[in-house]
Image (cartoon, rainbow, N blue to C red):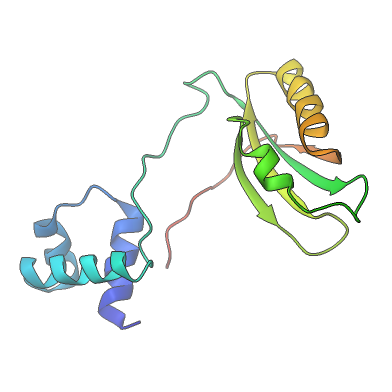
Length: 145
């Protein structure tokens, strides 16, 4: 990927709502050239979409936790992500190396909500869990530098 494309990706990571005019000014290209490059980056799958950054506290979901997931029976089909996709409290699911199979980032309203979600996760995917509760988030969703 060229330096100009990297600059476009970096700028859009910082602010996905930039107009093509503002983006063109930032990277030193014409508006039409930036538009073409963004379209190509989207077609190549480098830019997968655009989203808003949410204040989860304001939405009533102040508790963030990471839940490590391991199957009860590793010989069974590995379909935990499919089974867990229906739980909206799970924001992200990462396949990981090591003792655990998946690491989930979850957001819930309270410790009681986390406890209920853990029960749902265990039941839905027939897994064991190990949970780490986030105390604070110094940074998250950083842009590419």
